[in-house]
Image (cartoon, rainbow, N blue to C red; front, side, top):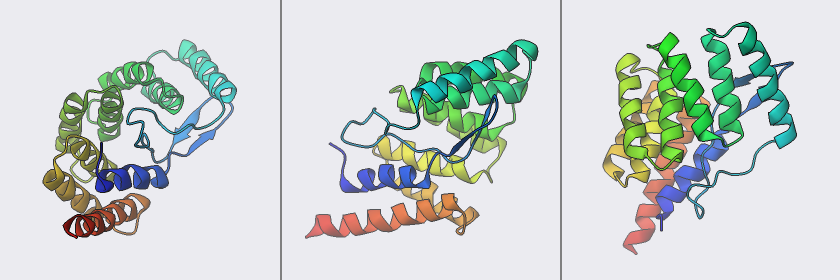
Amino acid sequence: MPDMGRLRLLALITICGFVTIYGAYGCSKGEKDTPKSGAENAPAPRGNEAQSSVVIEGIKSELAKKPDDPALMQSMGDAYFENHQYNEALTYYKLALEKKPGDATLYNEIGLCLTYLNNPAEGLRYIEEGIKKNPYHQRIWLTKGFILSRLEDDKGSKAALERAVALNPDSDVGRAAAQFLAADKDAGKGKKK
């Protein structure tokens, strides 16, 4: 059973949000949320399945016209991720990564998919590779903190979250990381009583 710090991390990343704006045939992704604890691998319900299917079909149609477009591949991964279809999302993120091998965002998304597919150690490997590509990518540090927390590496999680805050404390990601650090500190005080 996860401790209160891990529960708060999951809640704060959820608060940070995963905003998808549906367009005529695609989506643009903002921040991601994570599975809520209690059901460790069951993400919170989001969106309308019928709407997600329309988005996926629209992107498939565009991909048929432009099969080598990494942005469309990434959008397809985002749509599947939004629909909690992590294996499918992983496939498209990896295809996009082949076209854009330096894209830290893709490493982040692959790391999250692998983590949600119960392979956080492999997910962390992708996160580390993404950090090598772009050590200033704030979201990847938040994701690293999340994965390390799931792996029960509290010290590593704290360091990654502190790095996320340091990169831009005023961004949504920076505030979410700071809130988790504060909540985790408070949870630690509660344990000592």
